Image (tube, rainbow, N blue to C red):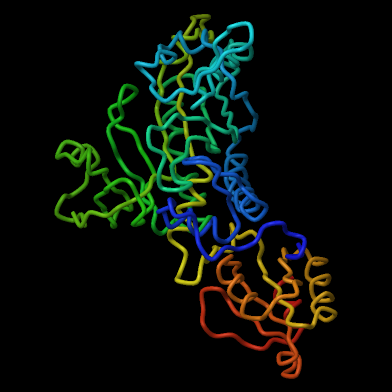
Length: 413
C-alpha cells in the first residue's frame, strides 16, 4: 500500500478524554477512530491488524475441526426467555429496540441461546456429535461505564466458539484441548510468555472456570502467579480450597500480585441451554439425552489493545510481526524512482509493504514510522545509495545497517 493513498493521517495528540494508552496510541497512529465512549471504528491500518489476529485464531480453530459460521446480531425475545436471560433483572446490559410492528428485539451480547436453537435442526442422533462451531461477530453490551479504550467497549468483535458433546467426559476432553489451542494462539500473537491460564469460580455452570490473563499494567484484574506451572489465580477467587483442588503449593507461588487483562475465557455450560431450549439426541439405545455444551471466547479488539499496551515506547507502537499491519515500512527520501522499484519487487514476492511515497520532510516520515510501529523500516535515500544500498532498521532497536538491495529482496522473500 502506498501511504499517499491512505486517507488517514497521524496525530500529535489523542482526544483529551481518552486516558488509556492503547486508545491514545491507536488513535494517534490512525488505526482507530473514536465515535463515542466505548465505540470505535477500525480504520484501514487497524482493520489489517484485526484481520491478522482473526486469521491466527481461525487457523488454530480450523486445525482442530471447528467450523466457521456467522449468526445475526438481532435477537427475538422468545429464544432468550426460555433461559431467563431476556429479563433485564438477570442481564442488565442488553441493547433492545423495536420493529415498526412493535416486536421487541435485542442486539446479542453473546450467542449461546441462538446457536443452541439452530442446532436443534441438525442434531438428533449420537452420530451427529460432537460438533464445534465458531464465529467472529459484533457483540453489543450496554456497559454502564465503557473504559480502557478498545479493551472494553459497548460494541466489539468477538470470536465465540461452542462445542456440542455427547456427555461430560467428551466435553472435558475438548475443553482440555482448547486450553492448549488458546495458548498457541496467544503465543503466535506474541503475548504467550505473559499470558497465564487463570482459575476462577465457575459461577452457575461448574465449580471452577478458566480465563486467560495477560500481565499488563492496563489490566482490570489482579492475579497471583505460579510461574512454575504457568498458571495463576484470580485474586478475587483466591482460596486454600482452590489451591488444594488444583495441587498448587502456596509456598512456591510468586503472592507478588500483578495486574492483568483477560484475553480469553473458556466455560463449561453443561446442559443448561440444551435443556432449556430442547436440544437433545438419541443414544445407541434410543434414549433421549441432553447435549452437553461449552463456550470459548476471545475479544479480538481487546487482543489488539493488550498488544498495544505491552509493545510500545515513547515514540509509538511496536507491533509483533505476526499481527503488524505490514511487515516493511519503505520510506523514500526524494528517491521515489529507486524506492518504487524496491516496492514493486518486494510486493511481487508477497512481502507486505507500506510505502511512504509522500512529499514530506524526513523527520515527519520517521516520526510517523515510529508511531505506526511496523517491524522493519527500510529507507531509500541518496546517502544510503552512496553507501551501496538501503538503510534497514528494526522498530524495537536503535541501530540500523546498510543492506544491498539484492540482499534485502533475498532476506524478505
